[in-house]
View 1 (cartoon, rainbow over the protein chains, first blue to last red):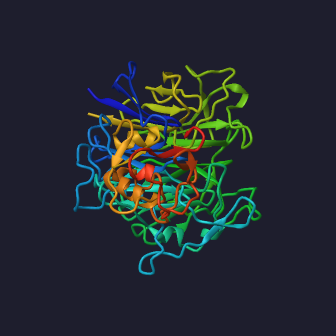
View 2: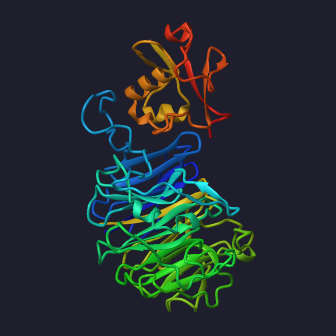
View 3: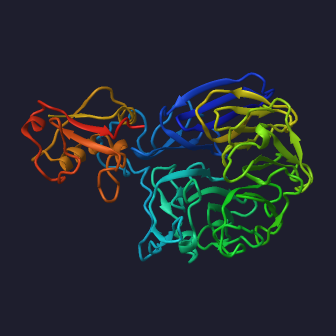
Length: 395
Length: 98
């Protein structure tokens, strides 16, 4: 019988929630990396026991952790457990957390400045890894989206990282600016039908696409409107919160922007608003049903200055029509006095026949629906604030 | 033998409990102590000093014989109490360390 493994990153550690295909009874393990902010964990689609985690701290900086046994044990890549720490020779050790912008004349781009909150220019500084995206084909290949926004890739299981400098250097960088959470590259989508195509999104710069494996990038923000910009339809500067794609339709993208839920059917070249009858179209998460590419989920949040559900009612909204027409899903979710937020990477979808939907809140709840959103129940209620949720469907 | 006391989170990363001891060849300075520490425990690289600039991370402090050495020059000789192992070199998270 199939199983699911839910990977939860929180403000104070990582948790792994496991269940069989019924998704009624759950085993909770953790915290791993207790006391650290775990921005994201994700498993390799090629080898589900290969997990990567971004562990970070304002005091001690960035750590990359890797598990090769489904989360039972972890190590910093390049430092396998039990290895003599002072052993000489071999590949470099202790650099799995070394994220250095490529400014070399051969491959890199000069480190320019980006826009600060007040419109002045500010130097680029590495702060943390927001999102880890393992390759669809190689367990040792993995991408990392970082703050200040850039895309890195490792080809050796996270031991060493190199920037794909074409993104940061595509000449729009000086017009990128941080959102409230920082200038983070938070979304990485690998096109399953085209190994040369990658989508990424940055707050607050917008969405970008490469069609040559990451060498060159172009902004794909036509159709987005942001009132906080001097030119609301500018090429870059938009606060994209998250983007989702269904594997069977890699040219169709769904976006939750700062305000507005958007859709593109031409690989991001053009976007149109699909907020329709949502009670508010501010929010962070967006995801697509595993088997129905026109079924989309969002969690509306009241506004950019009030990051909690409207009227204290935690409601997931589902559209079965690819947007515009939305239905509230409330069964099992708190419908009074609920003032949590659901952050951008904190929703995930499993691929069981009856599609499971999961999301985590800043109040420490992780909710699961085993029936595509019709019914919800908390897996856990009292974790630290949830930063990210991913799910693995296992045989 | 030089004794180093690490904050809890770094002890966890280094998979040690209590203080660690390291050998430093030549003059004991903040730089030589941290170089030796990172050589013995590579998993700590980047967590105390920046990988590239080698500057102390902003929210960490270095205490030596009840004095704050965080802003001393990295190559200044440490007191003999440190180089002899009589006193530990303390790496401390600012305030509570998270």
